[in-house]
Amino acid sequence: MIYQGSCHCGAITFEVEAPDEVEVENCNCSICNMSGFLHLIVPQHHFRLISGADNITTYTFNTGVAKHTFCKTCGIKPFYIPRSNPDGVDVNLRCLTPQPKAVKIVAFDGQNWEQHAYTLAHKSL
Image (cartoon, rainbow, N blue to C red; front, top):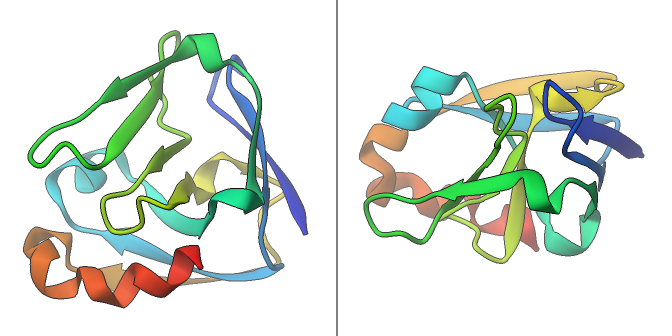
């Protein structure tokens, strides 16, 4: 299924291909916990930025591998390149329309990322 996605103000729009039943992670690391991001990790070829490349700003911290992308206008983070899957794209489920038919939310211990990152590696294949 092809989902449409955007930031809050609509300056950034994209499409993502994913099943109509998905499993997403609810991470407890500092940035995800504060932002409420629900992680739908997809292979890069299942993601297409439609508009707003010039409205994206990027934030990195710690190792600098993850590229946290935000809208310069509204501040929403609709997707980013995750440290766990730098070959994929991590889409915020909450930014998609329509929502998948079924969503399974699983806890991910991002506070202890190094011990658990391997459980996400298959998601960008």
